[in-house]
Image (cartoon, rainbow over all chains, first blue to last red; front, side, top):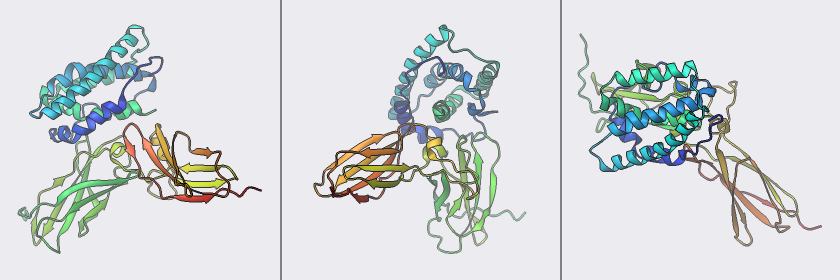
Amino acid sequence: LGSCRVPISMAEIRAGFNTIKANIQARDPIKTLSILSYPHSLHKLKSSDRCCITHHLFNFYVDKVFKHCKTEDSYVNRKISSIANSFLSVRRSLQQCHEQNKCLCGQESTEKLRQILVNYQGLNVTSAAIKSLGELDILLDWMEKS
Amino acid sequence: SGELYCSLPNPRNVHFESVNMKNVLHWLPPEGTGDGVLYRVKYSVYGVGKWIRKPECRNINRTWCDLSTETSDYEEQYYASVKAFLNGKCSDWIETARFNPLTDTKIDPPVVRVSSTERSISIILTTPEKWKRSPEEESISLLQVYPGLQYNVSVLNKKTKKRWFFSISNNTLVVPWLEPGTAYCVSAQIHVTTPLLRSQFSKEYCISTLKDK
């Protein structure tokens, strides 16, 4: 992520998400709205802003998504908390980068992050959290794109 | 108003089958309907508000529809939906799960080319290309799509039945210190760690090392 070196267990996060992806996405009936991709895809952002976007999106998922994704399925809940733990450790590393000014936000990414929050607040908390969790592969795909 | 009465059983198992991002929608006929059922297909980009009809798959009697062109942007995710019609009746629209071409496609094995000297085998692997609309369109190797793509290579000594496995990132491999005048068979597989994707192993390509002079 630019000058910010963060160990991220992508394969582990992916594997965890893959096991619950169909279950979570099936709980999201709203196909006409995306929280991460509206109005523009993450892929449209400048690569120089990758660290900032990743830092703020990890905060978003830890603070606003995982905790609101309780389901009636204990297996799904366990997978969600496993993903959340992975995010927590990455967030700590990203926070250090942020504090060392290696993770600065440009105007474009600041606007994108604002839009994501607007999209999130446009739904009730549970729906917004489930939809965001169902879009985790959108974030992972973007992070892995070189 | 000529509105059809939708009491026909629904198409079943509506899903994408994707190989090298050639994305084809498949389904099973409604239960117990026999011949004569026609289908219509529509698709939508996740997060975008509208369903789009697929004209080439309007009133078709086959149970598949190629949506590769419509789903070729692998930075997007998609839904598709099918409706059945028979004798003036229709079914509901039945949708797929959300389809992510990047993670939900299958990858073909690499093409393997081998050559030999007296005591070594040289292996060159070629990754399949992403599906493209026409031969004139620019080719995109799946290597460009999946930067972390690797190869697992198996080399079998046909005489001793001894087998070696190699995991390599670049597409060439030289296996040294082999026995002259011996047949070796090579097979290779593509492996992407994240997203986790793994091709089948290719068929075996056999070659003999040259005899000692």
